[in-house]
Image 1: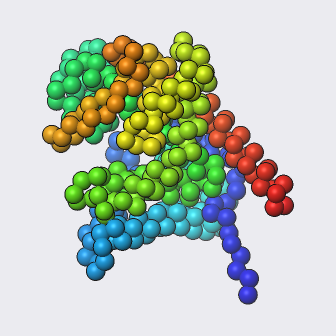
Image 2: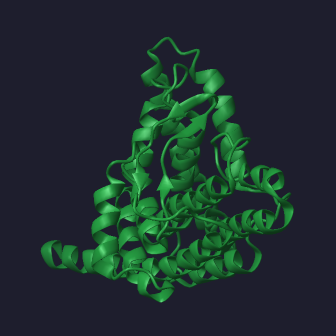
Length: 333
């Protein structure tokens, strides 16, 4: 008996993607709004307690938790959308648009970064340190003006991939269900993907899967940043592309360093370097050692670069997926 394999989500020909983008640009992520990512976080917390009791090694415990969380994060939206589509297609379109909206965080990232810049300009170091602590995991209590600005810019650069380019990539590839699946991977990595005694084994699969999911989007992002560079009076395309890949690969993450290095060269600022996590110094290499120290005004430039790069990146992603689909059709059609 043949079992029909349904697409992950009903096909709305990209209109739901446009609607989700519009919602993100208009509303961002208001505090207090119910959010499925928070539910995924609660599920991970509960699942960790249960899966750590299994009579297997921590690596297998964590791998099983990762498989379960990601699978349900994909299947639940898919089932919801197909059920809604069977009852009332317009309702399914609305749900699809809202799911996509929840997976994107471009405006929220921009607002948080600009709030740090305003705090530096108007509120002083103590207020700015508290503000930047909202978007970075490092210790901020001793950061200088340039250290706060650098932390905000690095967060914008890294989260351009995690918070926008990657979810957009997976949404364009497989619809809102795939985008939500990606967000579950990213949430798992942020909660259990640490390289400490507690999570080095338990979170290994989550961390590796996050690296894999971000691999292509991070590299497309570097190309997008390089193309956007002239619009913010940065170096020409070739310089940013070369330095982004050359210096970005020295970062401990195979993906996070690429946009950070690219932003450093476009903005002409020195980024990264040693940072403190929980009293432990992490010796990261500097990006663009010839650059100047960043200040509040550079955060605004970083936000502008983020918007330009995301726009170009969307076009690159759609073009790449269309080209790949065409090639597969020629080879196997």
